[in-house]
Amino acid sequence: MSVVASAPARKGRIPELLLLILALGIGLFAYYLVHIGTGGSGLPDNFVTVAAAAAALVFGSHLVIRWVAPYADPLLFPAALLLNGLGLAMIHRIDVADESAAVKSQLQLTVLSIVLMTLTVVALRNHRILRGYMWMSLGAGIVLLLLPLIPGLGRAAYGARIWINLAGFSFQPAELAKIFFAIFFAAYLAQERDNLSLAGPKFLGLRFPKLRHVLPILLAWGLSMGVLAFEKDFGTALLFFGMFVALLYVATERVSWLVIGGGLAAAGIFAIVQMVPHIQARFVVWLHALDPDVYDAQYGSYQLVQGMFGMASGGLFGTGFGDGYPTNSFAANSDFIVASFGEEIGLTGLLALLGIYLIIVIRGIRTAIHLRDGFGKLLAAGLSFTIALQCFVVVGGVTRLIPLTGLAMPFLAQGGSALLTNWIIIGLLLRMSDASRRPASADPLPPKEILDTIEEADEDPEAADETDDPSGSNSQLTEVVKIR
Image (tube, rainbow, N blue to C red; front, side, top):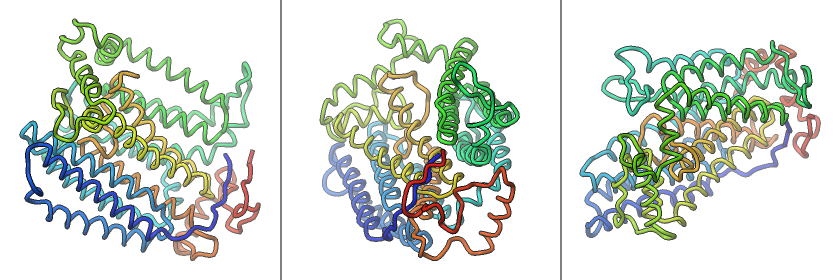
Protein backbone atom coordinates (compact mmCIF):
# COMPACT_ATOMS: atom_id res chain seq x y z
CA MET A 1 0.00 0.00 0.00
CA SER A 2 1.40 3.39 -0.94
CA VAL A 3 1.44 6.58 1.06
CA VAL A 4 0.72 9.79 -0.81
CA ALA A 5 0.93 13.08 1.02
CA SER A 6 -1.78 15.66 0.83
CA ALA A 7 -0.78 18.86 -0.90
CA PRO A 8 -1.95 21.99 0.93
CA ALA A 9 -5.60 22.48 0.07
CA ARG A 10 -7.89 25.44 0.33
CA LYS A 11 -11.19 25.28 2.14
CA GLY A 12 -13.98 24.36 -0.28
CA ARG A 13 -16.72 26.68 0.95
CA ILE A 14 -17.35 28.64 -2.25
CA PRO A 15 -16.87 25.75 -4.74
CA GLU A 16 -19.22 23.50 -2.75
CA LEU A 17 -21.80 26.29 -2.39
CA LEU A 18 -21.83 27.01 -6.12
CA LEU A 19 -22.04 23.33 -7.00
CA LEU A 20 -24.88 22.80 -4.52
CA ILE A 21 -26.82 25.67 -6.13
CA LEU A 22 -26.25 24.04 -9.54
CA ALA A 23 -27.25 20.56 -8.32
CA LEU A 24 -30.37 21.87 -6.58
CA GLY A 25 -31.31 23.90 -9.65
CA ILE A 26 -30.98 20.89 -11.96
CA GLY A 27 -33.13 18.77 -9.66
CA LEU A 28 -35.86 21.41 -9.48
CA PHE A 29 -35.68 21.94 -13.24
CA ALA A 30 -36.16 18.19 -13.76
CA TYR A 31 -39.23 18.38 -11.49
CA TYR A 32 -40.58 21.22 -13.67
CA LEU A 33 -39.90 19.24 -16.87
CA VAL A 34 -41.80 16.26 -15.47
CA HIS A 35 -44.74 18.57 -14.68
CA ILE A 36 -44.75 20.00 -18.21
CA GLY A 37 -44.12 16.65 -19.90
CA THR A 38 -47.04 14.99 -18.14
CA GLY A 39 -49.57 17.60 -19.24
CA GLY A 40 -49.17 20.33 -16.62
CA SER A 41 -48.82 24.05 -17.28
CA GLY A 42 -46.87 26.73 -15.48
CA LEU A 43 -45.09 25.84 -12.25
CA PRO A 44 -46.31 22.97 -10.05
CA ASP A 45 -48.54 24.16 -7.20
CA ASN A 46 -46.00 23.27 -4.51
CA PHE A 47 -42.89 24.28 -6.47
CA VAL A 48 -41.99 27.34 -4.37
CA THR A 49 -42.54 25.47 -1.09
CA VAL A 50 -40.44 22.50 -2.21
CA ALA A 51 -37.67 24.76 -3.52
CA ALA A 52 -37.53 26.85 -0.32
CA ALA A 53 -37.50 23.79 1.97
CA ALA A 54 -34.85 22.05 -0.14
CA ALA A 55 -32.66 25.17 -0.19
CA ALA A 56 -32.92 25.57 3.60
CA LEU A 57 -31.97 21.92 4.19
CA VAL A 58 -29.11 21.85 1.70
CA PHE A 59 -27.52 25.16 2.62
CA GLY A 60 -27.96 24.47 6.32
CA SER A 61 -26.11 21.17 5.90
CA HIS A 62 -23.46 22.95 3.85
CA LEU A 63 -22.80 25.48 6.61
CA VAL A 64 -22.57 22.79 9.29
CA ILE A 65 -20.20 20.64 7.23
CA ARG A 66 -17.95 23.59 6.41
CA TRP A 67 -17.89 24.56 10.09
CA VAL A 68 -16.84 21.16 11.46
CA ALA A 69 -14.92 19.86 8.41
CA PRO A 70 -13.70 22.90 6.48
CA TYR A 71 -11.35 20.92 4.22
CA ALA A 72 -13.89 18.26 3.21
CA ASP A 73 -14.05 17.42 -0.48
CA PRO A 74 -16.33 20.02 -2.15
CA LEU A 75 -17.60 17.63 -4.87
CA LEU A 76 -19.04 14.73 -2.88
CA PHE A 77 -22.10 16.44 -1.40
CA PRO A 78 -23.18 18.22 -4.63
CA ALA A 79 -22.72 15.07 -6.75
CA ALA A 80 -24.85 12.96 -4.42
CA LEU A 81 -27.47 15.72 -4.17
CA LEU A 82 -27.71 15.96 -7.97
CA LEU A 83 -28.30 12.21 -8.31
CA ASN A 84 -30.85 12.22 -5.48
CA GLY A 85 -32.74 15.14 -7.01
CA LEU A 86 -32.93 13.51 -10.43
CA GLY A 87 -34.07 10.28 -8.82
CA LEU A 88 -36.90 12.11 -7.05
CA ALA A 89 -37.96 13.68 -10.35
CA MET A 90 -38.13 10.29 -12.08
CA ILE A 91 -40.00 8.67 -9.17
CA HIS A 92 -42.53 11.53 -9.38
CA ARG A 93 -42.81 10.95 -13.11
CA ILE A 94 -43.62 7.26 -12.49
CA ASP A 95 -46.12 8.28 -9.81
CA VAL A 96 -48.00 10.44 -12.32
CA ALA A 97 -48.29 7.53 -14.75
CA ASP A 98 -49.24 4.99 -12.07
CA GLU A 99 -51.40 7.38 -10.03
CA SER A 100 -49.35 6.57 -6.93
CA ALA A 101 -47.52 8.70 -4.36
CA ALA A 102 -44.18 6.95 -3.76
CA VAL A 103 -42.26 10.21 -4.13
CA LYS A 104 -43.67 11.57 -0.85
CA SER A 105 -42.05 8.88 1.28
CA GLN A 106 -38.86 9.08 -0.81
CA LEU A 107 -38.73 12.85 -0.26
CA GLN A 108 -39.14 12.39 3.48
CA LEU A 109 -36.37 9.79 3.49
CA THR A 110 -34.16 12.16 1.50
CA VAL A 111 -34.52 14.81 4.21
CA LEU A 112 -33.69 12.24 6.90
CA SER A 113 -30.74 10.94 4.87
CA ILE A 114 -29.14 14.36 4.44
CA VAL A 115 -29.61 15.03 8.16
CA LEU A 116 -27.93 11.70 8.97
CA MET A 117 -25.07 12.52 6.60
CA THR A 118 -24.55 15.85 8.37
CA LEU A 119 -24.72 14.22 11.80
CA THR A 120 -22.13 11.66 10.69
CA VAL A 121 -19.69 14.43 9.82
CA VAL A 122 -20.38 16.23 13.11
CA ALA A 123 -20.27 13.19 15.41
CA LEU A 124 -17.24 11.46 13.88
CA ARG A 125 -14.44 13.85 14.77
CA ASN A 126 -11.75 11.45 13.55
CA HIS A 127 -12.29 8.37 11.40
CA ARG A 128 -9.47 6.44 13.11
CA ILE A 129 -11.67 6.02 16.18
CA LEU A 130 -13.65 3.45 14.16
CA ARG A 131 -10.58 1.21 14.10
CA GLY A 132 -11.11 0.43 17.77
CA TYR A 133 -14.57 -1.01 16.98
CA MET A 134 -13.29 -3.78 14.69
CA TRP A 135 -14.93 -6.78 16.37
CA MET A 136 -18.00 -4.79 17.37
CA SER A 137 -18.50 -3.86 13.71
CA LEU A 138 -18.25 -7.52 12.71
CA GLY A 139 -20.86 -8.47 15.30
CA ALA A 140 -23.19 -5.64 14.27
CA GLY A 141 -22.92 -6.62 10.62
CA ILE A 142 -23.74 -10.26 11.29
CA VAL A 143 -26.68 -9.35 13.54
CA LEU A 144 -28.09 -7.08 10.83
CA LEU A 145 -27.84 -9.89 8.28
CA LEU A 146 -29.64 -12.28 10.62
CA LEU A 147 -32.56 -9.96 11.39
CA PRO A 148 -34.68 -10.96 8.33
CA LEU A 149 -34.57 -14.59 9.49
CA ILE A 150 -36.37 -13.80 12.76
CA PRO A 151 -39.98 -15.05 12.59
CA GLY A 152 -42.48 -12.22 12.74
CA LEU A 153 -39.85 -9.60 11.97
CA GLY A 154 -38.48 -10.60 8.57
CA ARG A 155 -40.52 -11.00 5.42
CA ALA A 156 -39.91 -12.55 2.03
CA ALA A 157 -40.64 -10.90 -1.31
CA TYR A 158 -39.70 -11.72 -4.90
CA GLY A 159 -37.93 -14.91 -3.85
CA ALA A 160 -35.63 -13.35 -1.23
CA ARG A 161 -35.97 -12.85 2.52
CA ILE A 162 -34.04 -9.62 3.04
CA TRP A 163 -36.57 -7.18 4.54
CA ILE A 164 -37.81 -6.55 8.07
CA ASN A 165 -41.00 -4.79 9.16
CA LEU A 166 -40.49 -2.40 12.04
CA ALA A 167 -43.10 0.08 13.33
CA GLY A 168 -44.95 -0.09 10.03
CA PHE A 169 -41.82 0.55 7.95
CA SER A 170 -39.89 -1.85 5.73
CA PHE A 171 -36.11 -1.88 6.01
CA GLN A 172 -33.31 -3.89 4.38
CA PRO A 173 -30.65 -4.45 7.09
CA ALA A 174 -28.01 -5.74 4.65
CA GLU A 175 -27.65 -2.21 3.25
CA LEU A 176 -26.48 -0.90 6.62
CA ALA A 177 -24.43 -4.05 7.27
CA LYS A 178 -22.10 -3.23 4.38
CA ILE A 179 -20.77 -0.20 6.30
CA PHE A 180 -20.01 -2.32 9.37
CA PHE A 181 -18.30 -5.00 7.28
CA ALA A 182 -16.24 -2.34 5.50
CA ILE A 183 -15.06 -1.05 8.91
CA PHE A 184 -14.18 -4.58 10.07
CA PHE A 185 -12.33 -5.54 6.88
CA ALA A 186 -10.41 -2.24 6.84
CA ALA A 187 -9.42 -2.50 10.52
CA TYR A 188 -8.34 -6.14 10.32
CA LEU A 189 -6.43 -5.75 7.08
CA ALA A 190 -4.66 -2.62 8.36
CA GLN A 191 -3.50 -4.71 11.32
CA GLU A 192 -2.54 -7.86 9.40
CA ARG A 193 -1.54 -6.61 5.95
CA ASP A 194 2.16 -7.42 6.36
CA ASN A 195 1.39 -10.98 7.43
CA LEU A 196 -1.11 -11.41 4.60
CA SER A 197 1.24 -10.11 1.92
CA LEU A 198 4.67 -11.33 3.04
CA ALA A 199 4.22 -14.39 5.23
CA GLY A 200 3.20 -17.87 4.13
CA PRO A 201 4.20 -20.49 1.55
CA LYS A 202 4.32 -20.09 -2.23
CA PHE A 203 2.54 -22.44 -4.62
CA LEU A 204 2.51 -22.15 -8.42
CA GLY A 205 4.00 -18.68 -8.14
CA LEU A 206 1.29 -17.48 -5.74
CA ARG A 207 2.02 -16.65 -2.11
CA PHE A 208 -0.62 -17.91 0.29
CA PRO A 209 -0.94 -16.44 3.80
CA LYS A 210 -0.64 -18.51 6.94
CA LEU A 211 -3.95 -19.87 8.12
CA ARG A 212 -3.85 -18.15 11.51
CA HIS A 213 -3.59 -14.75 9.82
CA VAL A 214 -6.37 -15.19 7.31
CA LEU A 215 -8.75 -17.44 9.26
CA PRO A 216 -10.69 -14.68 11.12
CA ILE A 217 -11.44 -12.71 7.98
CA LEU A 218 -12.34 -15.84 6.00
CA LEU A 219 -14.71 -16.93 8.76
CA ALA A 220 -16.35 -13.49 8.79
CA TRP A 221 -16.70 -13.54 5.02
CA GLY A 222 -17.93 -17.14 4.94
CA LEU A 223 -20.54 -16.55 7.64
CA SER A 224 -21.92 -13.46 5.89
CA MET A 225 -21.99 -15.25 2.53
CA GLY A 226 -23.79 -18.22 4.07
CA VAL A 227 -26.47 -16.04 5.62
CA LEU A 228 -27.01 -14.14 2.38
CA ALA A 229 -27.21 -17.38 0.39
CA PHE A 230 -29.79 -18.72 2.86
CA GLU A 231 -31.78 -15.50 2.44
CA LYS A 232 -31.36 -15.80 -1.36
CA ASP A 233 -29.87 -12.31 -1.53
CA PHE A 234 -27.53 -12.91 -4.47
CA GLY A 235 -26.94 -9.22 -5.20
CA THR A 236 -25.73 -8.28 -1.72
CA ALA A 237 -23.58 -11.44 -1.56
CA LEU A 238 -21.90 -10.39 -4.80
CA LEU A 239 -21.40 -6.88 -3.43
CA PHE A 240 -19.83 -8.11 -0.18
CA PHE A 241 -17.55 -10.51 -2.02
CA GLY A 242 -16.35 -7.80 -4.39
CA MET A 243 -15.60 -5.46 -1.48
CA PHE A 244 -13.77 -8.27 0.33
CA VAL A 245 -11.48 -9.06 -2.62
CA ALA A 246 -10.88 -5.39 -3.46
CA LEU A 247 -9.79 -4.55 0.08
CA LEU A 248 -7.50 -7.58 0.19
CA TYR A 249 -5.80 -6.39 -2.99
CA VAL A 250 -5.51 -2.78 -1.81
CA ALA A 251 -4.05 -3.91 1.51
CA THR A 252 -1.54 -6.44 0.19
CA GLU A 253 -0.91 -5.30 -3.42
CA ARG A 254 -0.72 -8.99 -4.31
CA VAL A 255 -2.20 -10.20 -7.61
CA SER A 256 -2.45 -13.61 -6.02
CA TRP A 257 -5.41 -12.38 -3.98
CA LEU A 258 -7.25 -11.44 -7.16
CA VAL A 259 -6.61 -14.95 -8.52
CA ILE A 260 -7.71 -16.57 -5.27
CA GLY A 261 -10.74 -14.29 -5.08
CA GLY A 262 -11.71 -15.05 -8.65
CA GLY A 263 -11.50 -18.77 -7.97
CA LEU A 264 -13.60 -18.48 -4.83
CA ALA A 265 -16.15 -16.37 -6.71
CA ALA A 266 -16.47 -18.89 -9.52
CA ALA A 267 -16.84 -21.80 -7.10
CA GLY A 268 -19.34 -19.92 -4.93
CA ILE A 269 -21.51 -18.83 -7.84
CA PHE A 270 -21.52 -22.35 -9.27
CA ALA A 271 -22.58 -23.81 -5.92
CA ILE A 272 -25.33 -21.22 -5.39
CA VAL A 273 -26.72 -21.72 -8.88
CA GLN A 274 -26.91 -25.47 -8.32
CA MET A 275 -28.60 -25.23 -4.91
CA VAL A 276 -30.93 -22.22 -5.11
CA PRO A 277 -33.78 -22.40 -7.68
CA HIS A 278 -34.38 -18.65 -7.34
CA ILE A 279 -30.85 -17.95 -8.57
CA GLN A 280 -31.17 -20.58 -11.30
CA ALA A 281 -34.17 -18.67 -12.64
CA ARG A 282 -32.13 -15.46 -12.72
CA PHE A 283 -29.51 -17.14 -14.91
CA VAL A 284 -32.15 -18.60 -17.23
CA VAL A 285 -33.68 -15.12 -17.67
CA TRP A 286 -30.22 -13.70 -18.35
CA LEU A 287 -29.16 -16.30 -20.91
CA HIS A 288 -32.51 -16.76 -22.69
CA ALA A 289 -34.26 -13.41 -22.24
CA LEU A 290 -35.67 -13.30 -25.79
CA ASP A 291 -36.89 -16.90 -25.78
CA PRO A 292 -40.73 -16.72 -26.03
CA ASP A 293 -41.20 -19.39 -23.35
CA VAL A 294 -38.95 -17.51 -20.93
CA TYR A 295 -40.52 -14.16 -21.85
CA ASP A 296 -44.07 -15.36 -21.14
CA ALA A 297 -43.26 -17.44 -18.06
CA GLN A 298 -44.17 -16.30 -14.55
CA TYR A 299 -41.16 -14.41 -13.16
CA GLY A 300 -39.68 -14.66 -16.64
CA SER A 301 -37.80 -12.07 -18.70
CA TYR A 302 -40.76 -9.76 -19.41
CA GLN A 303 -39.56 -6.88 -17.22
CA LEU A 304 -35.97 -7.20 -18.44
CA VAL A 305 -36.97 -7.17 -22.12
CA GLN A 306 -39.41 -4.29 -21.61
CA GLY A 307 -36.61 -2.27 -20.01
CA MET A 308 -34.37 -3.00 -22.99
CA PHE A 309 -37.15 -1.98 -25.40
CA GLY A 310 -37.57 1.28 -23.47
CA MET A 311 -33.87 2.13 -23.62
CA ALA A 312 -33.82 1.31 -27.32
CA SER A 313 -36.77 3.63 -27.98
CA GLY A 314 -35.00 6.40 -26.05
CA GLY A 315 -32.14 6.38 -28.51
CA LEU A 316 -29.31 8.87 -28.16
CA PHE A 317 -31.13 11.82 -26.58
CA GLY A 318 -34.29 10.25 -25.11
CA THR A 319 -37.98 10.96 -25.46
CA GLY A 320 -38.00 13.68 -22.80
CA PHE A 321 -39.50 13.60 -19.30
CA GLY A 322 -43.11 12.50 -19.50
CA ASP A 323 -43.04 11.41 -23.15
CA GLY A 324 -41.91 7.80 -22.72
CA TYR A 325 -43.56 4.65 -21.37
CA PRO A 326 -41.24 3.54 -18.55
CA THR A 327 -44.12 2.04 -16.56
CA ASN A 328 -44.36 -0.78 -19.11
CA SER A 329 -41.50 -2.30 -17.12
CA PHE A 330 -42.12 -3.64 -13.61
CA ALA A 331 -40.40 -1.71 -10.76
CA ALA A 332 -39.70 1.22 -13.08
CA ASN A 333 -38.92 3.50 -10.10
CA SER A 334 -36.67 1.06 -8.22
CA ASP A 335 -34.91 -1.94 -9.80
CA PHE A 336 -35.37 -0.61 -13.33
CA ILE A 337 -35.01 3.11 -12.80
CA VAL A 338 -31.89 3.03 -14.98
CA ALA A 339 -34.03 1.79 -17.88
CA SER A 340 -36.56 4.54 -17.14
CA PHE A 341 -33.84 7.18 -17.38
CA GLY A 342 -32.41 5.53 -20.49
CA GLU A 343 -35.78 5.88 -22.22
CA GLU A 344 -36.52 9.49 -21.27
CA ILE A 345 -33.05 11.12 -21.28
CA GLY A 346 -31.39 8.74 -23.74
CA LEU A 347 -27.92 7.26 -23.89
CA THR A 348 -26.33 10.70 -23.59
CA GLY A 349 -28.16 11.50 -20.38
CA LEU A 350 -27.49 8.04 -18.96
CA LEU A 351 -23.77 8.41 -19.62
CA ALA A 352 -23.89 11.79 -17.86
CA LEU A 353 -25.48 10.12 -14.81
CA LEU A 354 -22.77 7.46 -14.79
CA GLY A 355 -20.20 10.25 -15.04
CA ILE A 356 -21.55 11.75 -11.80
CA TYR A 357 -21.14 8.37 -10.10
CA LEU A 358 -17.61 8.26 -11.47
CA ILE A 359 -16.89 11.62 -9.83
CA ILE A 360 -18.00 10.27 -6.43
CA VAL A 361 -15.88 7.13 -6.82
CA ILE A 362 -12.80 9.01 -8.02
CA ARG A 363 -13.00 11.56 -5.21
CA GLY A 364 -13.40 8.74 -2.72
CA ILE A 365 -10.35 6.94 -4.07
CA ARG A 366 -8.44 10.21 -4.13
CA THR A 367 -9.28 10.59 -0.45
CA ALA A 368 -7.96 7.08 0.19
CA ILE A 369 -4.70 7.86 -1.62
CA HIS A 370 -4.01 11.03 0.34
CA LEU A 371 -4.90 9.74 3.80
CA ARG A 372 -1.86 9.11 5.99
CA ASP A 373 -3.16 6.10 7.95
CA GLY A 374 -3.63 2.59 6.66
CA PHE A 375 -7.07 2.07 8.16
CA GLY A 376 -8.43 5.25 6.59
CA LYS A 377 -6.99 4.32 3.21
CA LEU A 378 -8.69 0.94 3.28
CA LEU A 379 -12.01 2.25 4.59
CA ALA A 380 -12.26 5.05 2.02
CA ALA A 381 -11.25 2.69 -0.78
CA GLY A 382 -13.74 0.04 0.38
CA LEU A 383 -16.67 2.46 0.61
CA SER A 384 -15.82 3.98 -2.80
CA PHE A 385 -15.53 0.58 -4.40
CA THR A 386 -18.86 -0.44 -2.87
CA ILE A 387 -20.61 2.40 -4.71
CA ALA A 388 -18.76 1.59 -7.94
CA LEU A 389 -19.55 -2.12 -7.78
CA GLN A 390 -23.19 -1.47 -6.94
CA CYS A 391 -23.53 0.76 -10.02
CA PHE A 392 -21.86 -1.89 -12.18
CA VAL A 393 -24.10 -4.67 -10.87
CA VAL A 394 -27.32 -2.65 -11.35
CA VAL A 395 -26.49 -1.26 -14.80
CA GLY A 396 -25.02 -4.61 -15.86
CA GLY A 397 -28.22 -6.39 -14.87
CA VAL A 398 -30.54 -3.94 -16.64
CA THR A 399 -28.45 -4.04 -19.83
CA ARG A 400 -28.15 -7.86 -19.65
CA LEU A 401 -24.41 -7.84 -19.21
CA ILE A 402 -24.81 -9.92 -16.03
CA PRO A 403 -27.84 -11.54 -14.33
CA LEU A 404 -30.29 -9.32 -12.48
CA THR A 405 -29.50 -9.02 -8.79
CA GLY A 406 -32.19 -6.80 -7.24
CA LEU A 407 -29.80 -4.15 -5.92
CA ALA A 408 -30.87 -0.49 -5.94
CA MET A 409 -29.06 2.16 -7.93
CA PRO A 410 -27.43 4.45 -5.32
CA PHE A 411 -29.31 7.74 -4.74
CA LEU A 412 -31.58 7.27 -7.79
CA ALA A 413 -33.83 4.33 -7.03
CA GLN A 414 -36.76 4.26 -4.65
CA GLY A 415 -35.80 2.53 -1.42
CA GLY A 416 -35.26 4.00 2.02
CA SER A 417 -32.62 1.66 3.42
CA ALA A 418 -30.32 2.06 0.42
CA LEU A 419 -30.77 5.83 0.38
CA LEU A 420 -30.00 6.21 4.09
CA THR A 421 -26.93 4.00 3.87
CA ASN A 422 -25.44 5.70 0.83
CA TRP A 423 -25.84 9.17 2.37
CA ILE A 424 -24.08 7.91 5.51
CA ILE A 425 -21.26 6.69 3.25
CA ILE A 426 -21.03 10.20 1.80
CA GLY A 427 -20.78 11.54 5.36
CA LEU A 428 -17.93 9.15 6.15
CA LEU A 429 -16.09 10.10 2.96
CA LEU A 430 -16.55 13.81 3.74
CA ARG A 431 -15.04 13.35 7.18
CA MET A 432 -12.10 11.33 5.81
CA SER A 433 -11.54 13.79 2.96
CA ASP A 434 -11.25 16.58 5.52
CA ALA A 435 -8.45 14.64 7.22
CA SER A 436 -6.71 13.92 3.90
CA ARG A 437 -6.86 17.53 2.63
CA ARG A 438 -6.08 19.27 5.94
CA PRO A 439 -2.69 21.05 5.78
CA ALA A 440 -0.06 20.24 8.39
CA SER A 441 -0.26 23.82 9.70
CA ALA A 442 -4.01 23.55 10.43
CA ASP A 443 -5.31 22.91 13.93
CA PRO A 444 -5.37 19.18 14.68
CA LEU A 445 -8.64 17.26 14.70
CA PRO A 446 -9.89 15.79 16.97
CA PRO A 447 -9.03 17.16 20.45
CA LYS A 448 -6.04 15.80 22.35
CA GLU A 449 -8.00 13.39 24.56
CA ILE A 450 -9.38 11.61 21.51
CA LEU A 451 -5.95 11.41 19.90
CA ASP A 452 -4.64 9.83 23.12
CA THR A 453 -7.33 7.16 22.84
CA ILE A 454 -6.25 6.43 19.27
CA GLU A 455 -2.59 6.16 20.28
CA GLU A 456 -3.46 3.70 23.08
CA ALA A 457 -5.37 1.55 20.60
CA ASP A 458 -2.29 1.42 18.35
CA GLU A 459 0.24 0.35 20.99
CA ASP A 460 0.27 -3.25 19.71
CA PRO A 461 3.35 -3.47 17.44
CA GLU A 462 1.56 -5.74 14.99
CA ALA A 463 -1.33 -3.31 14.75
CA ALA A 464 0.86 -0.24 14.51
CA ASP A 465 0.62 1.52 11.21
CA GLU A 466 3.87 2.90 9.94
CA THR A 467 1.96 5.55 8.05
CA ASP A 468 0.58 7.16 11.22
CA ASP A 469 3.77 9.08 11.97
CA PRO A 470 2.54 12.41 13.41
CA SER A 471 5.92 14.05 12.93
CA GLY A 472 5.52 14.02 9.19
CA SER A 473 8.78 12.11 8.67
CA ASN A 474 9.60 10.11 5.57
CA SER A 475 8.64 13.22 3.55
CA GLN A 476 4.97 12.26 3.72
CA LEU A 477 3.90 15.85 3.06
CA THR A 478 6.01 16.34 -0.03
CA GLU A 479 6.33 13.09 -2.00
CA VAL A 480 5.04 9.63 -2.60
CA VAL A 481 6.64 7.05 -0.32
CA LYS A 482 6.50 3.46 -1.44
CA ILE A 483 6.18 1.12 1.53
CA ARG A 484 6.76 -2.00 -0.52
